[in-house]
Length: 322
Ligand code: SAM
Ligand code: DTB
Ligand code: SF4
Image (cartoon, rainbow, N blue to C red; front, side, top):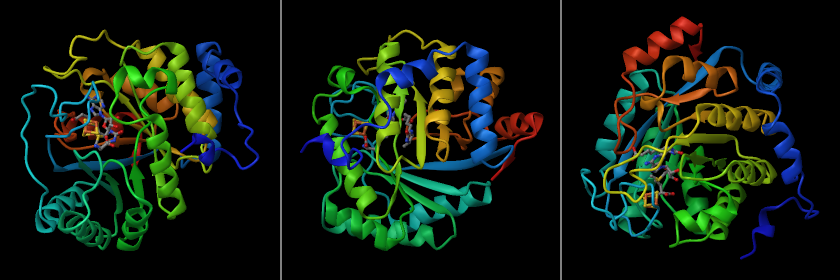
């Protein structure tokens, strides 16, 4: 399957590499100013969406994503378990809502969803959580067209499926599925009327051009993603990237600002990696256009800041939950 299938219908990309490069490479203060202008025009003022993650199936994933503690190929110290029951998922979602989350995201360490009882159980969980009146997001690996439609019917708001990095760097990070496989799932998702949540990870050893390449691909998706998670690599012992160097914070802020300018209507989510950021760095991310965070002590398998500390930071900045 060619990735041309999800490009604009006239096959001409809206943004070229040069277009994106020119934004990303603006003098830092001009870049932030432009991003803030776009933010003020298209996004609610001084609001942050709080989301909570649930790892509904942990570990033993057959894929080889070099960053991921849940791949069965690496020796990591994580808790592994089979698919959680709908009752358990619902309990977690109720708690997340009580803590202020308006979006509940279920992740599963699968290459793709096995059809049958497990898929039915996921559909039941999606349906039950959607009735709480929160947005429901899933990230379960690759989907078929039919599964996408069934998830939509069950009440799914959004599907998270990240491109992670540029097409040219991708093969250095994942060899068990292709960039086009990812694009195909994204197409099934948007064809089913589900919102697309698609972003990447910084700190994989990628170059500036790779970050720009990823932003270019995301901004040219048709339709553009409603949600763009920007993760910073959490270096987990046992994964091939455990000793990778740190990503420069200014590169991360440039990535967020460029995403904000190119995808004005998307929520830009400051996702994994906040534990390694100071309050000041996170504040710069919000200034550059990030308007969502995950709250709760855990992401999927790794740590996340304390909820009380997160609330203190948002208070200090005069940011309130959406
Ligand atoms: N298995 C599904 C998939 O890969 O599509 C869903 C779960 S997967 C853990 C969701 C996303 O988490 C990945 O696409 C990746 O962007 C992010 N992620 C995984 N491990 C990470 C890490 N160590 N640091 C930062 N982000 C990570
Ligand atoms: C996304 O882009 N980031 C979240 C969510 N989508 C599923 C996951 C981050 C995972 C970080 C590593 C872990 O906790 O295992
Ligand atoms: Fe599996 Fe997803 Fe982790 Fe890749 S990122 S190893 S697909 S759980």
